[in-house]
Length: 170
Image 1 (tube, rainbow, N blue to C red):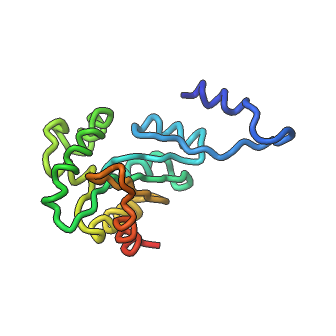
Image 2 (cartoon, one colour; image 1 turned 60 degrees about the vertical axis):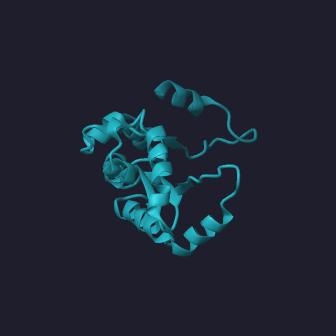
Image 3 (cartoon, rainbow, N blue to C red; image 1 turned 120 degrees about the vertical axis):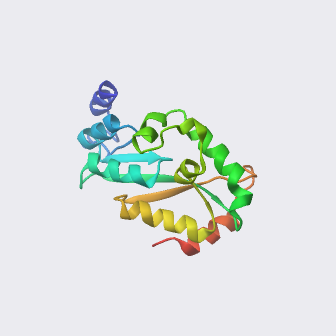
């Protein structure tokens, strides 16, 4: 990754005569990539990790690095209706997170117990999702985006986004 960033640093950017390169943010999960983001980028974006990891990421990035979190979520008025979709979403996110999750106290991530599924994928009411967003902000995130998972991925969830927008912090 360092070699790639070196190449980016020497590549032309913008119109002729433009000297400044753009600010970049690295997608990072493990502490090594977070440290590289702190050293060579404006910050990092972290996808699909528990709030506890947001604290870890903030510590590694330091106070000045941008920390953008993407929270996986399923919106429903009944958590029992969303449990299977939340579990499937957590399972899809699991492969490259096992070691990190063990470090957060999830000793057997492959078991996908309810505690782990809830940590990775917030599911329930818009208020529940808004509370999780606030928890990430309280843990040091500068920005939290939502990856809304639905049972009908081909249909835009406009109504669901409206429900979420009404509850999210500004």
